[in-house]
Image: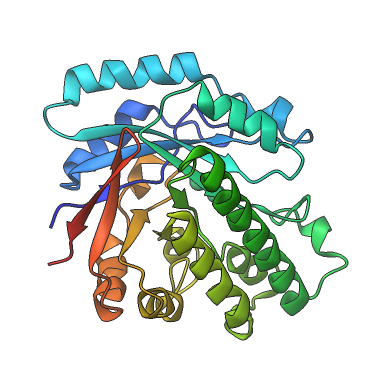
Length: 275
Ligand SMILES: [Zn+2]
Ligand SMILES: [Zn+2]
């Protein structure tokens, strides 16, 4: 079955030093049919100065890679947009004027506070922090559904929808997503309304957790609600992690009877049937 890694970073993200060519070579080596770079676009005023997103250099690098490797593998240009309340207009203006194969929306914060800073957990226990994060995801997908009504589909994929468990596991050795199935269901329902494809992100499988983001139960719920396809991504920040644990992810998707994997080229979704 053709597999595409549709969530990965290179030196065009502030938190990776990887040469994009190494990502391409690793993806070819792993036998992937395609890889789509999703560099960070973090517009919150506290993060923006550090974000260093440089569209011109990023685009040129991918054009050159396509010249060399484009017959061996699909090389997509994507972007991982951080949901930043208050920056909606800035984000929309940027997306209107730049071209991508895939636009991913990811929530990395509860309200305004990034969940990956332990200091921000001072006022939250695991269960309340988890709910607060998932409520922010609900807010983000509702925004997607709203702007889709006005502008057509602006976002294609919802990244790592239960990312909060990576940090509750890291900081408190606990995962408390299951009691929030009301919020998970709401997120999935709004994704369907907004034509937003949820991602299965395998990064937690190499970070000490025994489940991807999201886990089997969430994917099963998505299928019950009528969901037809999922986007697959490693969230690699190093070339070695491209396509990592996709075998486990595929087992879970098969168990949940997900009919297809979604791939994106020039924003057009093409579903590949699960075999
Ligand atoms: Zn992310
Ligand atoms: Zn990422």
